[in-house]
Length: 385
Image (cartoon, rainbow, N blue to C red):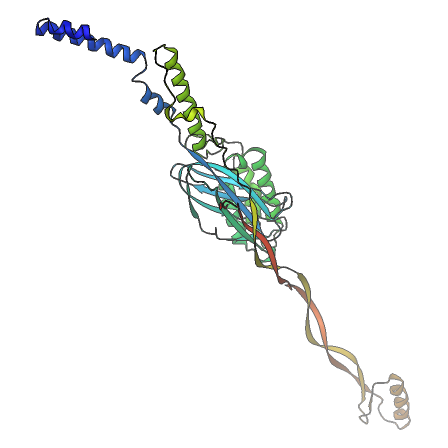
């Protein structure tokens, strides 16, 4: 470089300018060949939206089992709008599922299941849509809890069933993989049978539940849970950082292979030290209690007071003699005949008031019980979910 500078000083200005331009062009070509201008482009091309998991916890006081339809979460964000099914576990009355979402704000609400006896649920806390914020940097797992209290079948109205049928059809049509294929068909089959078992379901509502599998395409493409459409992508910021370190080390090794004469040292010396192990949460159940109605349906007879026939009173017209004994009637008739009197008599029916069963009805003679349930989980480090 010093020789080039001395040469420029010893030549005329216009000749020197031409030489400087040539040197600049050569420098640009060399820089392009070594990738000096490609770093930003590579970083942009490999940039990826960061994601995190949202845990959906659903609990029921009673009745939610393998024969029920699932609780269905409706999740909406700026660029996604989809449904996700949460089924009860083997023990029943509790189900958990996880969806992976890109960072941002979302609303979550739930659709009530229908049980095999036609009963449904009142949804607490999530009856209205909740807003959650997904942050890949968060140390705690983000979760939404939906508590459901059973409504007995005879208390579930036809309008309630109609609403559940309509919402479930929309969910299967616009659901993710948990609501498509055989899973979606099974849900619609259960919906049809369970709605039919409800005593308040109208013929119209039953028919709509029956026709649901004809109106909904369970084999259509599942809705994406992220704008990029990668439903199964569970990468998070930790994974992204890990990939970045690996790329940086690869770049360092490439620079050393050029034989520049000065070996480069890893920045900060971090690559020479083993990374600290990531903290693993040890989750424990936190319990709470609540009052739960335990149904006890009994049949109660209905009574009313009626006039019931008891016997006849026999009254003679000749002398007004009356009796309830038919043998006495015969004897008195003989006496009247001997006297030359009329033996005519009338039969007067006699009634008594009696309490008579005229039908029956059912009543819920249930009671409240204190039930213990898991309201959240915690770790000794202070994290909760």
